[in-house]
Image (cartoon, rainbow, N blue to C red; front, side):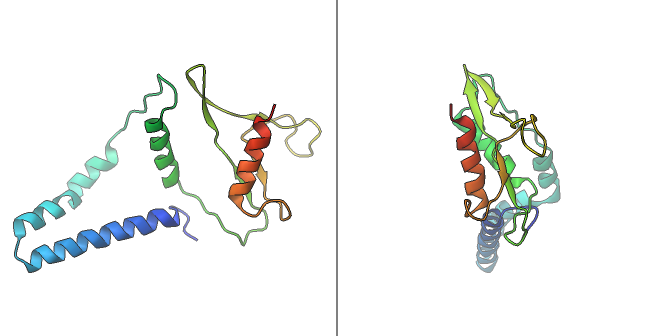
Length: 151
């Protein structure tokens, strides 16, 4: 399994690169060097460095909006991770983002005092994947989140 990017993100990047290369090949074949230059110039090292160093400001003064949540989703999708079904100790957490009175907030839960491991600690909702109850890691995370927000 890929440990730095999700499979869909890699597939999309590969398709984008193939589309760009096919367009560049067609422009070269047709002798349209001006258009070819326009297509390839954003891939010069100096432009790539500028894009990598660009800082994007995340404005949360009005809470989590659609734009900020989408930006966070994209950044989180780029984070390194490794998910495999082969590992017998799989676990999942959910990062529940919400607005409380217009203030961007993160939902945590407090572990029960009677638990063997980490009793009374504050944590994200989630837990170990149970063979009988959970079919996927996503089900584990979402099920734990639903349990955490029940009154």
